Length: 349
Image (cartoon, rainbow, N blue to C red; front, side, top):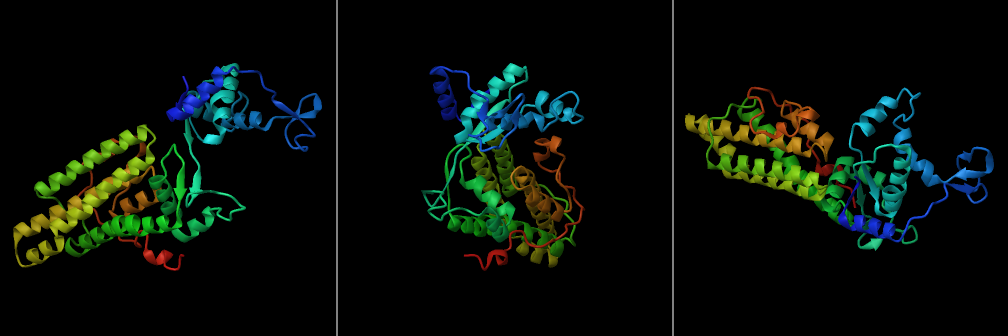
């Protein structure tokens, strides 16, 4: 069974099929193809239709064919796995009709899912060279970094619908969400652990209602992210992660570790325990945030874990790694350069 996502694209495919399917030619004349293409055996005047040989690359690239030493990749990722094709809406027919027909004819298992995404517009207009509104992704990566651009597209563009690109919104996303919320949360947490706990993750001493609320939020967000990922709602999954980041920032303000540190320095043992608990809670929340961000911002997630003195869990440990309390007290934090520094884009327009 082949699943087509979203439902609207599935309906388009079914509508096309109901009109009746006919055989189609898998070659083009050498002249029509301007001499480009794989020659048809025994007929030099014909070349293989580009979409026929292009689709085969999905399995030939994995070494399909018994004599190919890479065939173990085909067995691992195609035969034993559940392949998901991620494609643009303009090539749905090729992947949802022609390609399955080819696979069925050859007795090869179908992919599990064809996930169809939409197109990007720029400030509401179709991207066109004549309009001069073409997006240069390499320039944006130079300006903001690949992780920031990836975050913006994942967060702001619905996975299966058209989305609009705005340079202004990208800049705002970088400043507000990545730099101010995520980067600042990590930076001040690591700095406070260095300043108030000699750089070691402290041992928590029980939980108050504030900690319990944050732990509950973390569990709810983890469950929501898992659910959204199963539906390919990447924009909703990233939005859910940011509710946890916002909750963690609010927790820091409400607890005010700097005040607890001052009271602790004056001999208040209860304040010292509250300080340890608050810093552990914030650091553990950041560890969970790193695990949740891993599918979306892998380098950022690894950097967060590294600054906390730990590492991301093995991929096969997810979602078990999202259980509260996995951060080991006593490990040393490792402050690095600030995540998403604003100076990095200070000259950007």
